[in-house]
Image (cartoon, rainbow, N blue to C red; front, side, top):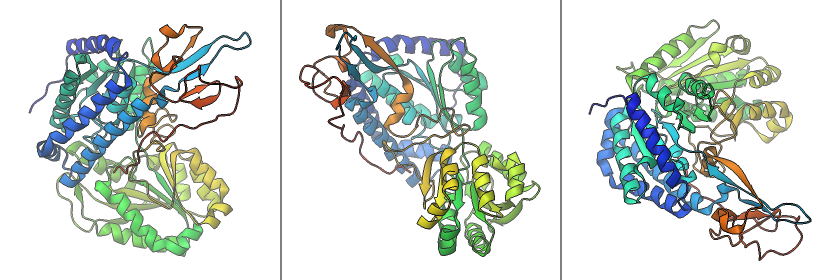
Length: 515
């Protein structure tokens, strides 16, 4: 199938339609939004193998991987639907009038039309019906998706499923729209349009930074929540390395080469202190990676970018090649590679800090723990940081633990970063340049909070308040009333205006492991 870039006129019409739909959709009940999301999940399942076969043809991903990813996407939609109905994300706060103070009530309201840019490496979970779309719909925001050109037909088919669900729900067509576009002009037109109120993006640093800059330069700047890449450092502490060098090598070899290294949580940097244990680890890691066959990458553009960045990294002064896959690569395949460099070489060369998206990792040999801690403190923002450490290691090196925590959104102990669990406790986002706003997660129901803003109502009569703030609590959600969490009505509460919290809300979403 051939797809044409959306014209400026088409984009203007689509955004105008989305803005009109926002006036209706923002007033829909939480259950109606949740039912829409569940209908989309059912539509993805009903699409069957034909949708999977289309994605396989466009992305070179295996059938089992894509089926698992579709299952994850359906779980995201249904679990975020549950969170939408539960209403905790509304953060309803009520301080009733007392002692001459005014009655003040606060909740979160939707921002408006959200433009979503899909990712190339997850054609379902981070694309057209992915987490950004699901959380924006939960928040009450219309969504305009720019399909990723690397899987344009897959995106087109999923968009049709969403549009059908919107229609069957009796909602305005503008609640969801889909456009195609290869050019930067398409993306710029979407981001800078007067009706766009927020942007979600998963992809490269260059792409995300361009969207962020366009949004910041608007007459009315808007937020851009961009995930832009990460090298996800893994710190090998001495005690753990001494007792588990071989096991750690096998674990990390599997993580570096998983999915041909095409995960945003791929461990692209491994750091340890010079010595026999690190030598053993590097030998075992190299041997394991050498036995992994090259894999076909998502599309020729990503394959070329990997080849170019890999060669640039390996050509730097002080960088040595530890191991490459023994088998020769075919066209558009990524060669599994392990490189190494001294700590001082890494510190003075910013290029070595950049992500090489694919089955590549750099081992940094530090002369001592002081240098290792210095490297950690100087690293740029990351999605994750992993510590391979014993309890004694953690007790002996608190400075490294703090330095690692300060640069990441998820701090991992004795495990690899690949594999992102879809749960409320997950934080998938980190300090710049990993993301443009480290306060928010793109995984888990807390992602809904990206698409809303707080509004306080002062001295409003009950009949004109939003349902979430009315005295009777018609939504039956958990609210903070005079500093107490409760599902009770305002009238039912007794006791002082200010007091300790007497109840806690239940778990908001079920647990599930996402790939």
